[in-house]
Image (cartoon, rainbow, N blue to C red; front, side):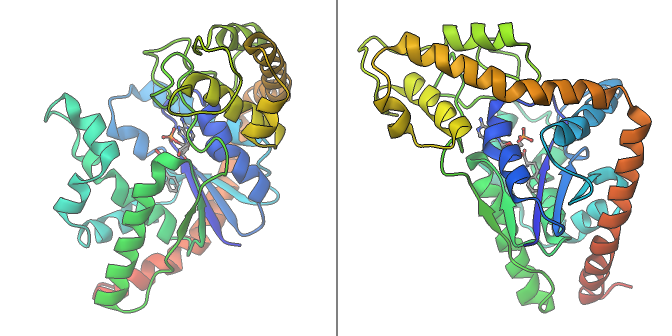
Length: 322
Ligand code: AMP
Ligand code: TRP
């Protein structure tokens, strides 16, 4: 199955990234799968060059530490394969201003005024190109990326209609639980990399004490009944989702076993700590060997280019170039 997905090196990965996306990637990896550190996307918001340089390596290491195997699938940096930037331009000339203006992720991030970077506006086009370059069938992502996937499908269909059959039309694959992990302090907001809520996000590389503290302080409610109810009990329901996702069960199955919030939180904390501990250890080992990571990334980029090159050429020719 041809799979493509990507993540931005814009900060430490949290449980939302892990349960919503990365763990699905690990489960679905195969010789036909491509997983990408989308470093060009990280330039859409202000970021120091030194910070980006460090975070892109850290994200690559996190992919491997979580179980993605470079012997099985292709793992690479977006900026190492120039076809991504090239196809982006062709697709910018297919996408319309109006449809990009309707993207909710853009509207949220651009709220602060018109000084935003043009790349923030055109970001979903670059993303569409990432996916289409690999003749992707499935894109495993969290719930917040659905709208971007719809745009990608629209652009592929429009291109095919206008210039002849060129791109395969992909579909999003969203996990059945934990597709939208919420902030532990403000459970009506999705968990994010931003540091505005230091107790709200659990990071994959958090030490056990930090995880325990964040779970213990997670906001719940006062009715005292353990049952899933997104509308009235979002905090508790979020904890049940995280539990069910790690355990591979359902929120109902977890809720049935508990009558007290304290017991649920204690067991959840242990489960998260023990699930993440091996990833954290492996991450530290990998970062200690940067040349090895660079070598793997170079091999990944070469393999990715072999697939992306012919697709890019086909698209360029269809438009009358080359
Ligand atoms: P990003 O951090 O925006 O690069 O997202 C990388 C991946 O993680 C995408 O597939 C997102 O859909 C997914 N993701 C991000 N935040 C969450 C969240 N709070 N819950 C579930 N999935 C998420
Ligand atoms: N926009 C995605 C996010 O913020 C990251 C991304 C870029 C992506 N290109 C992609 C995800 C291609 C899937 C496929 O999460």
